[in-house]
Amino acid sequence: MEFSYNDNDNLPIIKFESMLKTNHVLFFDSEEFENIIHHYLNEGKINIAKKAIKFGLDQHPTSINLRLFKVEIFVFEDKLDDADTLLHELYNLDPFNEEIYIQKANILSKRNDHLKAIEVLKKAVELTNDVVDLYALIGMEYLFLDQFENAKTYFIKCLEHDINDYSALYNVIYCFEYLNDNEAAITFLNTFLDKNPYCEVAWHQLGKQYFVLKEYNKALSAYDFAIISDDTFVGAYLERGKVLEKLKRYNDAIENYKITLNLEDPTSFALLRIGKCYEKLKNEDLAVQYYYKTVHEDPMLDKGWIAITKFFNKKQNYQKALYYINKAINLDTENVIYWKLYSQINQRLGLFEEAERGYKKTLELGNYELNTWLSRGDLLIKLGEPQAAIYNFEQAAEFYPENAELEYRLAGLYFSINENDKGTFYLKNGLKHNREYNFIIEELFPIISKRILVKNLLKTNP
Image (tube, rainbow, N blue to C red; front, side, top):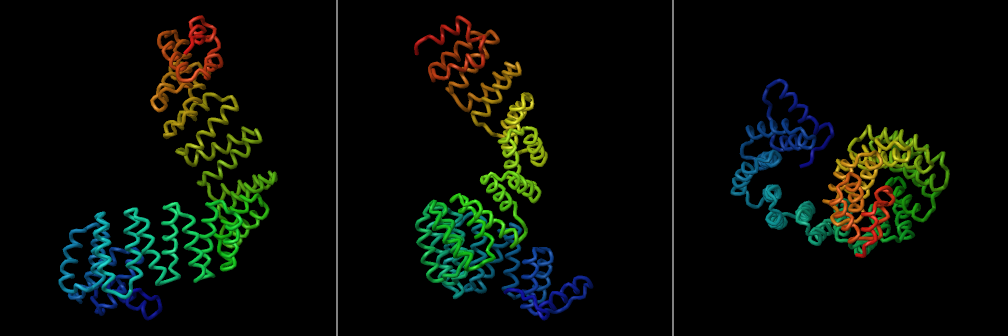
């Protein structure tokens, strides 16, 4: 039972809290206790709700609804066996109470027995005329099982009973998207809009489906109708801006993003997109101004720091690019993209030790792209650290076996430390897997490439 917040309904709360402070036990009828408990559960004040349940059951020990609240607390605290025992007692007292079935299904769901939970919920449907919440619960259980077709069926049932159930609408579209069935989603939404033509959420979702299919003009029309239905719908303006960017209508996109800044507090997403649009329009002053605003609004948004770093990188202002990527790293030392940019910029500045450190950090964070291994290893060669370079490339070879680019590098390194057998082994492997990469020897190891042994191996036919 929902708690009402008018003055009369607040009286039991005030009275109950007064009782807690004074330790004078006051009487409440069972319905008042239900409202009090419901209030504290909604507030997330579980301990006070538990006290209310105890006082309620002391005064009304036979109340099934109050005992069901106790079950709910047991489930919340993962005391599932206690909840099950109490539910069994309540079932014997009132076998036609749908709330008992709902709580039973909740327990089964927490035990990952979703099929059994669905079976129990379907029994509850037979006991009540208020089926919408039950359909939603069944739909969620099917989602847990990744049975998206079945889930979709039950969320659609929710909409058939309440056309304004936007939660169900979002879930229906989620199922269509997971099934990669955008065409069917469009058909469903158009049918839905025939019945509810001013539903801004449906128009918004329709626009997103057209966007995925790259039908940008249709997406634009859908967002237009979403805005006609609700001219304060921020999400529609943002999505409309994205479509206008795809259509290269950057000034129109900026206008849409700026509308959102006036409708609510500025979002880093809108500020970033405005900056991107200005950059496309070659208005660099305004572009960088909005990138500054983006990182000021949300310092943890990596896309903002990446945008401003790449902006100065493109302008070959590497010192400024390095300044901003260092600021980004200070905020988030675990961001792989930051470290890769850090390495690339330092490399362009000729700061090879710093660049190598960045690539090493990138690998430590789990970015095992071949190019990262190659870039780090080549820097180690340049820094005169052949053993470290060998170790780097041998690690890389575990992820990329029989890779010619790695094998030529290992060949050159082993020849450089006069381990000719290993050098020969890797050079033969490199030639076997891809002769076209043999220029690596001459490029990275020009002195080694002039050795007679190496020249002869390079001339050998596969």
